[in-house]
Image (tube, rainbow over all chains, first blue to last red):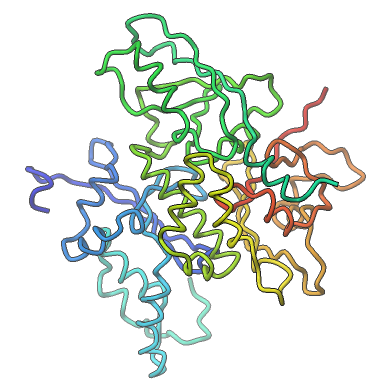
Length: 139
Length: 275
């Protein structure tokens, strides 16, 4: 992103998808560090959010991405706040459900929130598997 | 018989006498005296230790001072946990004052969240309150409040103003007359001996038949290994705000009266002292 780094810096991201029983939605936890191991600061994370999401971020950075303790590992992670997830997910789900089209909640959610923090899902995730039916007991 | 409201005051005004000592490897221009302070159980370390920071910075050079962090017997203390919880979990059966070591270097990135300003504490505190209300009222009460009410909760905590805080918080402790309690109880159970930082699950305060669930019911459901069977030897203590409430106490009552200002019941399970 222009203005953030003068040289090309490689940043290593680690993403975890957790489920919040309090909000009953999935939550995206992530951490990021440079190749030398130095972790990114919250300010650097905010700056790395894609331009098209910066307006929303500026409105309420503290409501959007903050540093929190991973509830299982107990280590600091950055978290994309789940409070507003239901709002946009219901709106998006309403369409396909009305037409009885197959929906994968997690793919839908992750393809929406992931890009905000650098996680871009390949299109192949959106392809319906050949044997996919309601009786599938795969992964 | 003590009024239930007195419990709210006792919880709010609980204090822990603490002795802060500078870590021996910090570089100082002269000897650093320890600093004594009564810490509010319901607050957060980084919110109430400005005087501690100033005291030690007086004997250090500016370039030696980076983000402050606290440690007890080798364990970095998580500032985002309430002080009373940290004490109950790590030091409740040791002699007072609580001895905390102060560091200004080598911030443990893998263990502690950063806390560069009071805004971080406020964001964390408000996020906890919002999550608690999501559990108690599907977020209806917190979302109906105005921004100034949210601000009043934070200012009440920051300035140690019981009345100011509870003027708003009492709304978060109400429930519709047709129900007998909250939808779910906001709680977290901590054990220093486990990998996992805490246990948090959905738990209803009222059983299907209408009976009130107790603290004992919660523990049996959520961490059955933590308490021994009734006839067995009780190897652990279940502690909230430095006391062991009776296991028969209704969890709805505990949630209304012994939650921290973030509206969560933070419960410690610690080894029972053998003497």
